[in-house]
Image (tube, rainbow, N blue to C red; front, top):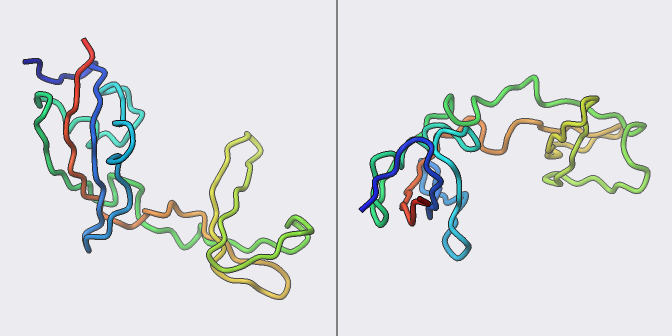
Length: 143
């Protein structure tokens, strides 16, 4: 039986939960997640968790907020004036928007307050400030 190592392309099934047990993501019911260990496409601790596993084995890990999406930052809650919003937008708290930066990077935003002259949006990652727990099962290793 093969053992997963850095550089291997692997497929895993996973379930992600918060410390209170709330599930925020899962691959179950979908195709397994495929990635190359050590390539950096995913959170490093997630990728490295499968090193040493054989297909069929699983592991439970915790990724502290600082190693995941960081702590929530108040400076990422910003005001957008009505003049900078699309004319047909009917903003509501909780609505998801996207902002494009000068270097064409897309940043997801969540409306947190609707004001008379604009909106307040939160540009923090939705999992910022949260410790993440994963149950990861190694499905296969591509030889």
